[in-house]
Image (cartoon, rainbow, N blue to C red):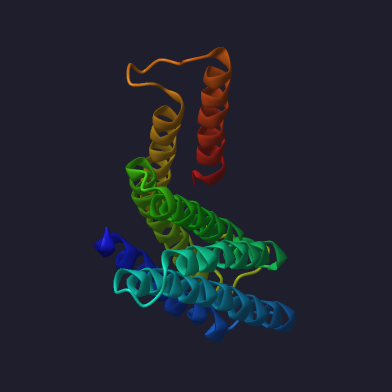
Length: 229
């Protein structure tokens, strides 16, 4: 589990380095260049803030393990962590990305939202000792990593496509890489729907639960259609 946590923080750091690269790009129009510079700075800052927040999240757990803080102090900090994380995530909606970067921003936001869900389950495990919450947290960490990775791929492809970009020069990213990752993530989303709403026999305990499962599957399908190249 610790390896997965560190891996997730590491990919975020890599993301910051890649995102900063957009700032040095030469845009064909001065206004677009200025917007791109501002967007790159703002997105890089969000990713950096997420990374710092996650580093602090796990360092506080280490303090508790070593007896430096009480469980009550840890849980009080985690309450503030969730509030702060929600504020950071809301900043994605205030970005004004160039058109080619809109999809990557959406994926970075989904990655952060999934990481927050993982943190909430992790906090539940610390608070109650519920092992199923720990398992859900670990699963969501991997999903957050996948979203982040796909976002970085799309960001790099978009960055490669903006040089000398104008309205008459459309950029078509390589389909194979993106399609494979989109399909993989979509299947993971559907598997999560199954684990959340189906019982051990693969059946539904009520009609209401089946409807919730159906809606969950539809959301996964919609996400796939929206992101397939």
